[in-house]
Length: 230
Image (cartoon, rainbow, N blue to C red; front, top):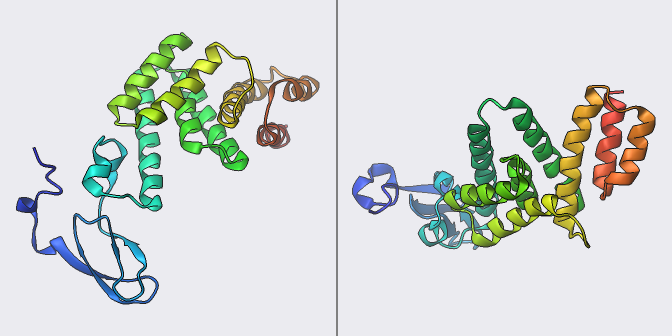
């Protein structure tokens, strides 16, 4: 079956339209199924302003359908994939609100730490959302792989995310940057919970930071938490 959004039998009069080039103002004609076009006057590559790329977050044939996706769309695709992974995590955990809250906190720290440390935010964030999807960490790896595969994530992305989750069950050895970011995100999620519940003293917190966090961004996040919630 052909995708209805790309099947010309379902197109209407607005299937072709013109938009101004953001660089020179020249009118560029688009058909609704074109992801990008180059301006005929200045050569700027323009993203189709009316195209809905939501399906690109989970369709395994998105590149074939949409062609060579520009960086703006690849970033959007990863954002949509992360959103769908978060939704699936919440659906599977149901009413286990404590584990959902932990995963959401870990994801928030993952995005912050990976962004500052120049890690891969998509990989680290997906791992943070899915690392506690099962209480047994080995089972979590298998479930995370199933979820991401069903969402149409690339195999290399799935493998790296699952590798990070597996590292929680069997830590050790030299850690790559993404692993350090993920490690700190998960630890910070737990630390935040314990700090806000009053289970960690300031003296213990400083010792914990020195003993457990591997990135400067993680250390800064912990210190910010202490100051903001002191």
